[in-house]
Amino acid sequence: MPQTNSQRVYETAEKAGKVSPGFLQLKEKIELPNGETTYNSNGVHIVKFLSDAVKDKKNPKTGEMDGGMEYLFSENGLKVKYHVFAKNRNGELYYFIERMAGYKIGDMISLEFIKKEGEEYGFVDIKRPIGTVQTEEVPIIQTEEAEAKEEKVPEMPKGKDDIDLSGIPF
Image (tube, rainbow, N blue to C red; front, side, top):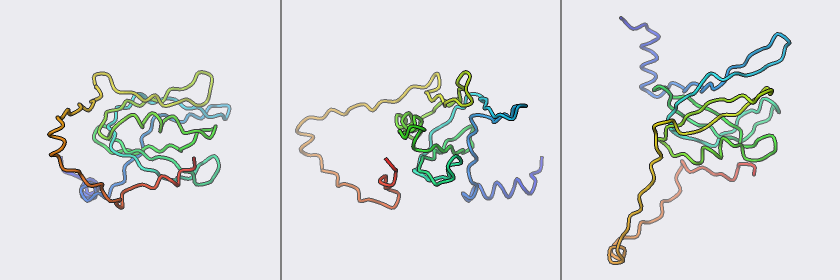
């Protein structure tokens, strides 16, 4: 079947790195007949962890810019991003960031919104998908003679991609 012009333009832009990733949608907003809002899960999402970055975003509750993390995942071959604010309602580190600190770039992760019974909101359940295992680094044991011969590796200078974490308000 021939490609449409839109498909060709999209493909060209994607190859050039000019397509912005979509957003990972873990829940859907439901407007109830009484005017209240609730959220429902739209299922389990198996994603590959590609990167994370410290990023400010406008908080819809306060209208102010707030610090947080933006995660980039791959889901079914498409890049998607997911943003969380750094602090929870109590001013503590948001659990999502705490849990994601246990994963490495390239890890497969299962994400699912779980609604708390009787409440409007819920939480995101983060775990390893069934059938995947965490690869642990195998320690390298060397003799003292091999260590003495080994050259010392110089420390890497700070580069433009280093993140200044002092701006996170904790």
